[in-house]
Image (cartoon, rainbow over the protein chains, first blue to last red):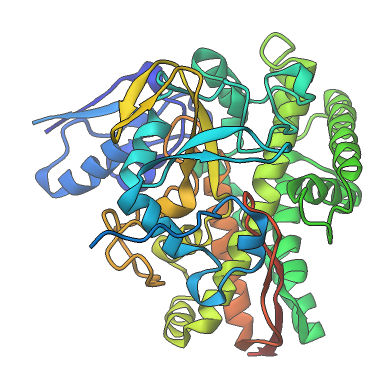
Length: 64
Length: 414
């Protein structure tokens, strides 16, 4: 699966980091989220789907 | 079977003042009725202090949808909750000051960005050591007392210090600062706020103090949110918006965390199995436990939005400019979203609670508050071997901020 983030929407709510810290990170001085791995393995699907659902600004979607 | 309609009193402060301690202090049967029978219910308030009417949304899924849809459900329509007047408001004639909660779109993003740097999940980790020190001191002071009012000695004390640090309020000013917040936070409970004049005075004092503190931070910047607000520059955060956002952060952080801690300890005392579970995990309390406490405590029962277009919802015709009310407390017990919603289960994994909201205006302090509570419960449980009620629980007379008024407890040191 491919993780796609509409970075303009990011407001640093941090829900994605809570749901899938293997995929998303927010550094100290970051203005927007960092994607650590935009093609995570299947074993992370449930976590990434939670990140998609929980993003308050609907900035994340999955392809495949 | 058609349900008989109960009297809907979910917006009456008496309902919460007289809450049932065995149902989390909440009118769960009324919430069930609304979710099942009238998921988009038009409520007439009949009170000059409150808005005229609102469409009440009670299902968990619908609350998520409304909160996430800022185009159709605007936060900038003039109201925050069911109160006609609030310390934060985009409408100057209502007396409030603008804050990000009552803005939409780009304006909202710009304001939130200034404050979010100090409050995101990574930044919050830096606060852990300080929070632990506060928690330890607060628990030790409580242990020395033996029997005390949990709401005051722990529920109030911890957020006061934590928020004090986050905002940058000098230690000597914190007690007074929070006294102002408490006054306008519970405007209908005459035990706390004898009259509406007190509310107005408290709001004015807080707003003036925010300006003064902003000036101090201009001269002596700190690692806090008020410094960030003044450093953003007047184009991004005007003088009025500084006041409004400080009022917002203060009211969002003080009572809500206190409410969650107080309801949390009550439920732990009621459920020895859950208290035991919490003790077993007291070296590192899992997020599921904290979020379960946030779910059942539902510190703010609701917030409102304003419809920007005519549309239909559950067979009801909502008109442009109608107020739509997200009843978080009802959404948090929706069996469509939770397994056994009335069960207090600290290991609950599927927990789409809406206490913090779920859209762009989601509580900015949720990470700080969650960490605060985690650390507080860890210190409390590690240092005690027993915590039990020393009297009856009593609730705040308020249908918006459904706090606990008194909760006498006795603790035994470990």
